[in-house]
Length: 332
Image (cartoon, rainbow, N blue to C red):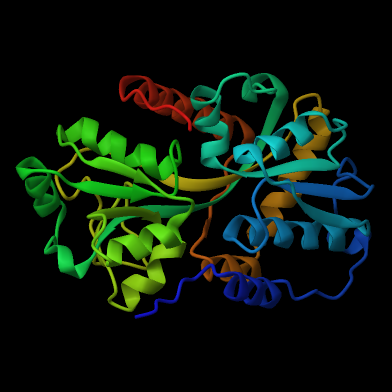
């Protein structure tokens, strides 16, 4: 039996093409761009490969920046080193607002503890501009497992050997389950994969019992009935899966692990420039057309002021540092 995944290269490129419909060119004056917004070519560095939700988000921002400023705005998919190559490129960039970092949560909040000898320090080297979008994570299992609830999963884990898969060691999804294990006292063997699709294959083949995934990847196979959703790791239910409970509702406690994407600049970027980028980016994200395109990616627009976003980064960094140390998690 074959299974269709939402982020195959063909599907991702098709989604990307449909999302990036070039709007009519409008003048700078028409769009009332703040005077301190960069008036030179801009580069948005995305430390992941082209085609995924983060890449689509970056390209939608670049498209609108270009329409507003009249200057080229492009995405540079600077991959490698678990995202650290792209992060370091922004650290070394001129602090003038023309080079920005579009990045997922884990690279900022997990890598600094998990990995040694990084070339950057998040607090020292980067200025948070805003949170951009969020998406829920959830636990799923195969219909063959016989597990239909979190209570059933916990009971089975207490009876004997049980395993779960994640997209890799030290990923936010890996640590979300380690947090669950710490809170419930259960044990499950972690099986890391290079991304979610191979883990999903093994889940369906009965090689692992549980898979932790983010919503954009899991939603199509949930709707197809190929996998059984157990619970969201977020504080609230998702409107896309209104019948799926949160871990809190399932009796696990106050676990709230949300995948998110944010926008940062080099730390020395002048404050008026940062303020202008925040203002423009907030306006872009409030566009109903853009929100519809992100909804199709399973992303919900979530704007946070720079200080609130910075506090989020610090808070989650502390949470993951505690889990990494207590669970003795080490990078491969």
